[in-house]
Length: 377
Image (cartoon, rainbow, N blue to C red; front, side, top):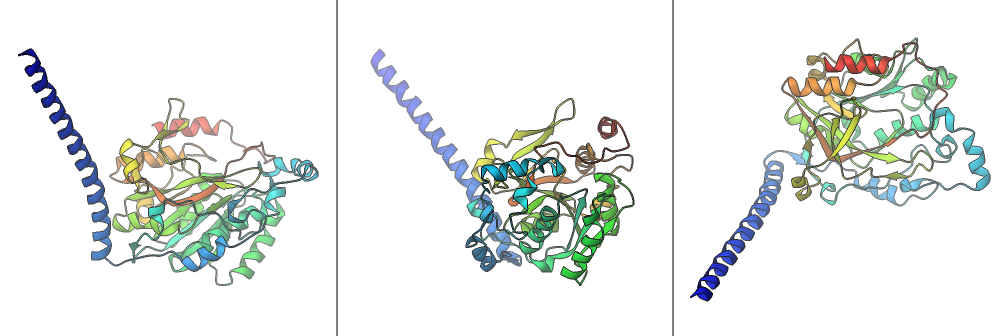
């Protein structure tokens, strides 16, 4: 009798376990199916296209030379000795940067489902705003060229460089002449501030003169990846209160190797207001290429509707130099009915400075703590 009861109990447990396994499998499959169906149906019902220039991408993959396809540049011992003398000019190896062409290719490290993805045919025009402070020449030009080469040019209204009172002479008349000669139609132009205002106010200066529907803020030591722009704009085209951030890849400060930082993260901060990266949710693993919400942005690279930016009041005018602006804007986005998302199919490489610089120090002291206090109020 006891044996029969045990067998029946075991059968019931087994049946329930199998049912739960089937239910979980079905649920996970349906999430995937519904997500894919929603994406594909949207693109069938609306006018969606593949914006990528596949011919250009193919030719970039075939290129060879120092740093091409984002590969690291290796130096001889004698070259390393020479390069060390320049590390403090900008906090990265400008000796290596000068060996790499200003239009170099980078490796396409997007998720497979990003390649050939369709986006709205009606995307807004953009103004790309790049603050510049004592930037190295080749690194700055490489930033601009990457933006233009890997974007559909019909979406670029203008690229605005904001010289934040730099002391280096090549960022004055030489830069003006280069831009007027290379981009005679005024596609890329520069604003020269009389004195250093800081990153935040330099961005505001560019935003006030921008005419594009969407403002894209980048740093002056970046390189965009393949087809970075359409996935960044597509969510904004559906809801102008959506703010989008690309995945930020790493350009090595020593070798200029282009590589992924990680598989993405949600922005956060600790009690000292230091920016932290939290792991993505487990459900994101089903579709790692799908945009996901993030509490706060990293702050350096993002796209926002010009209308929404000014409805939020732009940046607080009391913020100085840099720091805290990403929290202040992120808080306003969420508290005023907006949405902040990271877009895995949009990738931009960024040089993270590894060495101290010899830049002139800001006149304002303790600006970082003051900015944090303002952002928290």
